[in-house]
Amino acid sequence: MYNQELSNAELTDYSDKYAVNHLYTKPGMLGEAIENYKNLKKMWVTDKQAIVVYVASSSGPTQLIIVTRYKDGLKERQTGFRKPFQERYTAANGEGSFQKWVEASQKTVDHSL
Image (cartoon, rainbow, N blue to C red):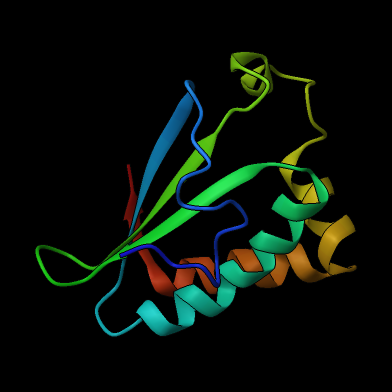
């Protein structure tokens, strides 16, 4: 199901180039994982990234499905196109926020594909 609270792009705001990541949460941790990912949205908005997030919980393991839509093409995936993740996350969420995000992710996420 499309999660507007975590997404910063509209469901119908398509792109020809995209990447799909599946983030499987630990049992009972979906709510905390969603709270942790709200801070990622701040970074995505700041960086002008088009991200759509879905939550799947009715069939198979609970997961967040994060779809990155590359509006500027695959050059967005190249090293150096954006600053490193930690730097961007800290700029959007404040000093010390990256370590908190890592700790919350370790607590709530089982694995990702």
